Image (tube, rainbow over all chains, first blue to last red; front, side, top):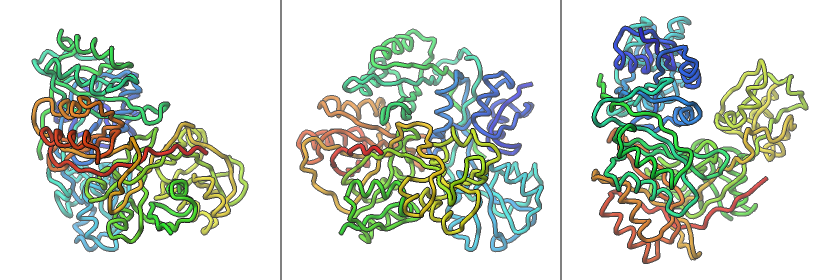
Length: 277
Length: 277
């Protein structure tokens, strides 16, 4: 049975993503932080880890990118999960009876339209959506609610005060499946992920993108992150279509070495399915 | 006298940046959020606003980028300020006597090496570094400390428990000066900032960068942000060297219109000085 490290508790969006990716018969290793997920994968305490890398509204999850860079970890898969937030409570309160609302800061931000419309409410950030649901159930706080998944309501026996309260219905989070070793992708046009540091030469980024354009390799995403010891210089993460095993891609990587340094190859993997709910 | 909106209280890094940029004879309009700064500039309640846009270790400040895009605001200047964090308290405590430490989440993260070495300490995130200093002084809490600037110690009469506690000494924040109207830059090689939305055509990003490379226009920074209504499609912010008034740059912008949409021009302004302390 696959043993999967995720950040958050049972009922978290990460768990829902993991079950959609691996199937329902998995064992979850709940972790407090993204770093803990990476550590468990590195030390082979789990078979895989699953981390959010990007939200379609908020953008890239920068901690995840930085942890990818710091750890010798491979990407072996991805999945896109539609995020539907529910307002949950111990009793079937009316909205006006709620005084405190707990959730992860991102979930709070994604429901700001509803939250801003409520008066005399205290918003309390917490480390996890499902964790807030678990805590609310345990502590039996009156007139309090949490923002979490529908699954959290089932798991912790909470009532749904209001369903689908996110500002934007087109709210997807992309999760990466990470492992200690690469998996050789046999599918035809997988996604591949790499990171590079640009050399200090004129037009370095243009030359980097030329490496791909000249070979008709399609880019999917490019993300820059700062180099801590070089103020305002950047590392680039690049996702493109192609298999790291293929000759054309190997030639591109060789060409990249002429215009960049510190090239890291994270792996080739199937494009993530979109799970709606 | 210039009236400048900043996020945070007197003694904040934004205030230090504003005084280095405009000189000491300015009036500060303290604001609770970045959005409030933008609102004050738009409604002409202040002459200028000053907002952090990027930290050399943490990376881009995404809220600032998103607010630039949402508001019809111009960029008229920038300044880079070295960030030196100090541990401050009401009394000259020893480190081991401190029980609670308050500060902005970014400041807390930037001092994680020291904080992780301390035992039995409670870390409490707050909305502002200088605001935490002000609150500590007012509430006279014993065995508590804040992480804030040296200037906050002077302004609020706090003792320095430990100076320069940031993990990385090369810690700079870049601030933008924003205004309601553009200022025409007369200097020779200013920085210019624009944002664009890529068209759904093959190699759109490569073609966009070609616009600059073909004209020997140097890029300074490129930052992508998600388009909320188009999951996993992006808007790009681009900083380059050149004046939006110059013919070559006007030709480049015209060329850009062939490969992108929703082009916004934020302005041309002098490269920011680096202020060390």
